[in-house]
Length: 91
Image 1 (spheres, one colour):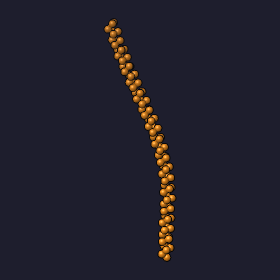
Image 2 (image 1 turned 135 degrees about the vertical axis):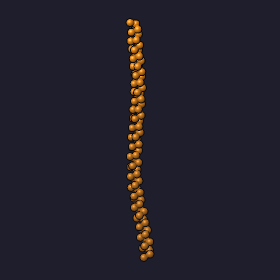
Image 3 (image 1 turned 180 degrees about the horizontal axis):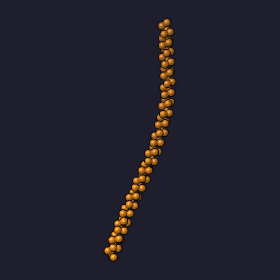
Image 4 (image 1 turned 45 degrees about the vertical axis):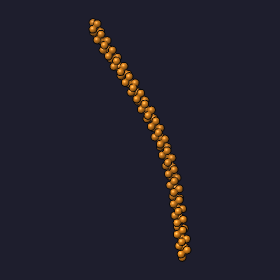
C-alpha cells in the first residue's frame, strides 16, 4: 500500500512541477506580449509623427511650386519685354 501511495505522490509531484513550469512559461509569454505591445505603440506614435512631417513637407512643396510658377511668369514677361524692346530698336 505504501508503494502505491508513494507512486501516486510522485505522479502528483511531477504534475505540480509541470504546472509550475507551464505557469513560468505563461508568465514569460505575457511579458513578451506586453513588450511587443509597447513596441507597437512606440512605432505607431513614430509613424504618426512622420506622417505629420510629411504633411508639413507637402504644404511647403505646394507653396514653393506656387512661388516658382510666379517667378517663371515674371522671367517670361521680362524676356518678352527685352525681346520687344530689341525689336523696337531695330525697326
